[in-house]
Length: 227
Image (tube, rainbow, N blue to C red; front, side, top):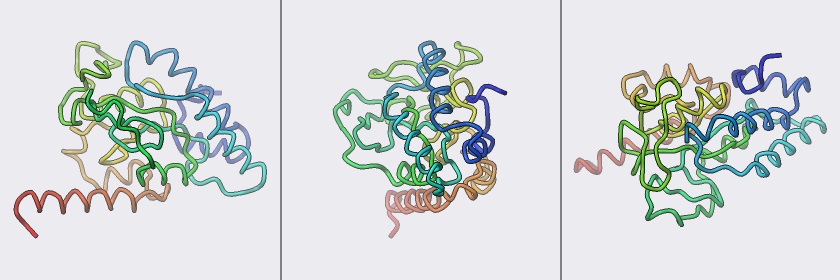
């Protein structure tokens, strides 16, 4: 069988749902891959293996009871370090926010969990998540897996690097839950096309993404002096 960390989200979810692979096995494979390659990439800057395995055990228990686990059941994903995840620091790449610990989850994280995803770790971002490269004074530089002399992009360079070398399934960060696709790609792409390509309709996550885009549109209007 192909290494589990190389499988797409759809492939892995199907294997877990059919009990051909357990969520725990999927989690362990991705954690092992993270340990092997992340030290040279610095894509994931915070993760707690015991929590990942606990999430996987919950998915496996639901499957054993015959319960629905969601379209991403057992699929490891990452979230960007500027997304609230209960108990983790939302640094947004800033030293000043190293102690800003989220007291609750962003709806994005909650919806991923409802869909059965396993939150593998948190990926790096530039300061304020507002650069075309991914480097900051708190978490350091994230490397491009194909050429360390080149930027991995930004602001989701950590997500992009992770999805290329750590997990073929999904690297999730706003504005698209990006599934590892750097912001520079989204800026020049079609929102509808990206949603379709990411399989978000099937995952039941469209509402979260569309809601985020609507919020950003309102904020831009306010900044421009609109109603």
